[in-house]
Image (cartoon, rainbow, N blue to C red; front, side, top):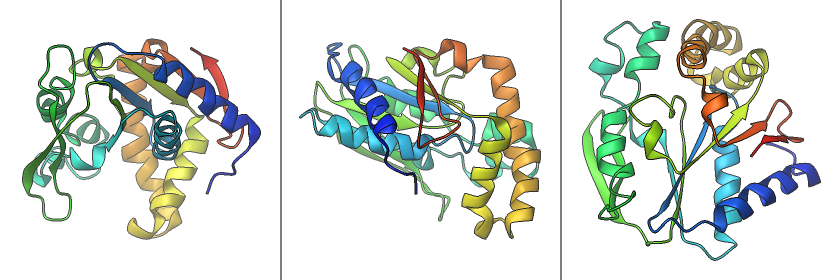
Length: 224
């Protein structure tokens, strides 16, 4: 659990205030980006709660409901970094069924879940968004070419590779055969995929807000 500090609260306050004052005429689509283990999910959860306290409707979505089916996810091999980067998530469905309907001229009827990891079944589930809702979606790779224009704001959580790797490995150690095994998997597949993303898409530069999250208890608002 991340310690709640004055500094973390101030960063969340500043980001929340910037987002809450915006009304683009459709739901505000906010992406929380960063490498694996950067702290995206925790930050997105806290930001969503902060935004909800302003009275705005908040839609909290994440990448877990938008994976590809197994035979696509692993078609380049279970250990392939390029396979994880290119095939883990169904970004076409995310764009068509969720982000575009929530964008300019959209119907606001959006899919909040498309794929079930446990059963590997594809079964889109839909809801309707309020016109002034704020959508908070966290995922790795969300500034790839096919999605970049679908975000109204992107918050990039910046963290050193070694710290992010250690956080991710500790989080997933139980499911990956222990901490040492998890470190190896993270280095060879997940962080290597993030290396490709950083090199090919330069997400730090393209994000509208950058937060130095090397120390999650004491984040720094690096750019806004």
